[in-house]
Length: 145
Image 1 (cartoon, rainbow, N blue to C red):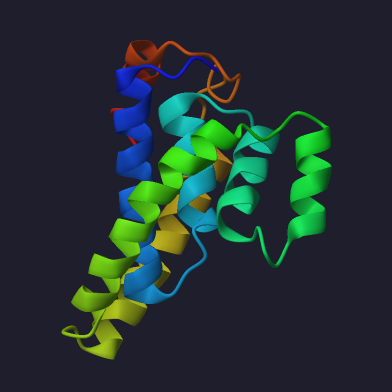
Image 2: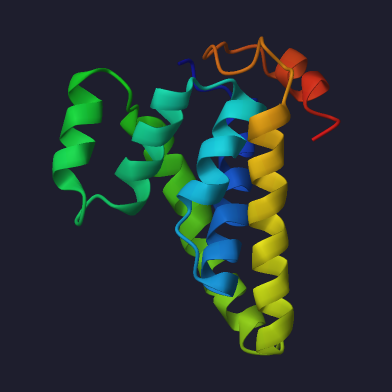
């Protein structure tokens, strides 16, 4: 994948958002990263999963990361850029979480999981997830997300 300025900005935004949610509600970034990489950057499901594993579970899931890497589903340049946003986002997300009642965080987390599940189950965007590099087209196709 060619890494353009637009790609870097999208990756940093995804990393920041994923990190904030991780710090805020304690989720693994995969619940946000995988759908975001598919819908905003056109990653295939396997490339998105491999990238997410490499970013979040490298020390824990090293064997899974190796398997995805061997099959060509991880680009470590992408992982590095996402990690920058994720680290910053997780710091601010966790700070924010300390000032919100637990019940509100719990409901936000539940709503997010339901929303993402429905989008993945019922999305009719058949052209997404093919690992294209046409960000303008992909972003136009995701305005309804």
